[in-house]
Image 1 (spheres, rainbow, N blue to C red):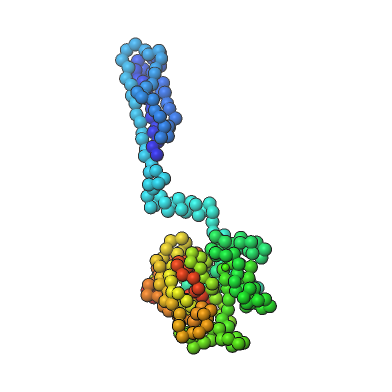
Image 2 (cartoon, helix red, strand yellow):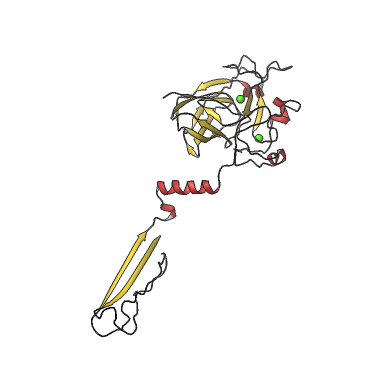
Length: 301
Ligand SMILES: [Ca+2]
Ligand SMILES: [Ca+2]
């Protein structure tokens, strides 16, 4: 976009008391381009005084980059303005048992404590948080209140919200679930976890990073097919795709239990984070049937 400020003056040698139109200063308000200017561009004076007349003209032309060609700094400014106009409304998860607050880095981020909105259960069940604190593909919790039934904090944890939650089951009557020889690393009994992952889903966590630095990331998880996750911090990717090794084991005769072979890995890539409060978004990129119990962030440099 272009902006032009212009001014034309007619000067005479007859002094300020001259009787012509001199000293008048036809002045145009700043036109903003794109617009049509008359061509040739002219200014008319009436009642010119006899004698020498001097026409003086000046124009100031300023160019601004078009919106689709803005600089990275301008983009950042506009993103900040957009964020200010539509601020993140998620808050750290909290309930009558768990006091909440931002999850602390360095430390253990519990995957089931993704952010929430302070709205009613009815609004949560209607998907009020969808697209804000999470993206889930089916608007129902397949674990809490469903597969896990009702009747306890563990069974009903966040049952009105769509990201799917379950807990580690030891000594399950009939068929072992999470305490089998197929585990590579033993989970903790009754640990809540985020599961039933589908590609494209994501969850958000408000975190408090206590120091600038690079952090290692270690997770306790299961993954039937392998796949990739990534993390962004305040909307900027900080990891790229991270490969999740599969925990599939053909020796397990029970198909559904392929989602219950626990493993713990530390990813090779460390993550640069700045001190302060941030919103991390955990993206599940390409494969279903993953469960995540927690993610440990440790300062390494
Ligand atoms: Ca779901
Ligand atoms: Ca957990």
